[in-house]
Length: 365
Image 1 (cartoon, one colour):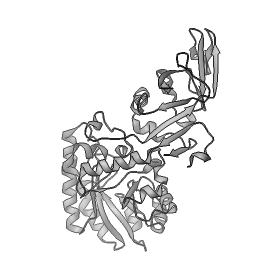
Image 2: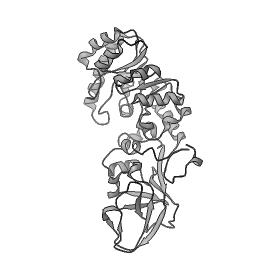
Image 3: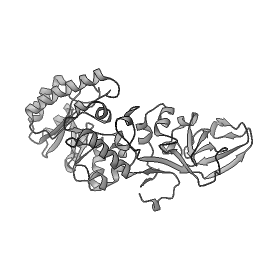
Image 4: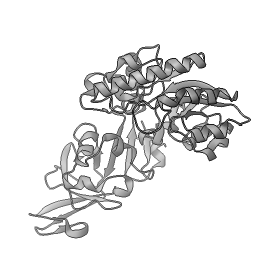
């Protein structure tokens, strides 16, 4: 979206150069012989970088979670490989074929359905190594392989799995890697020239260099944020986005004035209160109001009252030279960080970032 098309004061700023620098740092970290499969699901973790075809075209393969996300990329003009890492639904087979989409495969029911397919289906076999979500169980793998081999229209291009605890549990993760390697060895005996073998996402990339194989799936680190505390000490990351709005209303109120729904805040002195037009319908969570701050003119301003659907209020009594139109950063990656917001909302940075709603314009810089 171009800046001159936007009239709403609430926007997310996206720094494409920072994204590309993160890609370069990740490639340097894993080595040039390792293929990066960037995870651009959920609208690029909320950044909408998945809409920038000039960025996507720098990758030979990208990964999404949903078939419809892959279809959107095709309609944008991305012609290279797209991997849907979640097991698709049976009624999506026609879309998968029509749009030349590669899929993760582990469901028996899905496999039964595509065995009689007339069109070629490219797959990465997903192994269950301890995530407890989807994947082919190690005890069923040989039977599953034989079933796949019975259909000459299924092209096995890769094998993958998911580390569940690569940020904190060495023993469990190493056990997952062992199960994965056993599965890979069996699959290699049945399918030659596997193009992609991958188990490492952001945590695995940073903590398990022994598990790169020939491809990795960077996610949150592409966007410049830490998947665990201290990750930034291992690899230099540049946050790619800032969420900001502007002051649209200012008022001076006396002591004892109630602010917002349910009178959750009562002023204890004469105060200056700013109204900012971003609310929970934009993904600005109500939990943050309890102890939350925003950044105005380089200073921290306390959120007061409940966050509303479309706006919230902040106490700007001590903000120097404050006026209508001043920028208000929900996070600026400096005074207010994404991780601070996530911690105060009792969640993770992934969730805060990816749930900023579509009605917030994204501005690419």
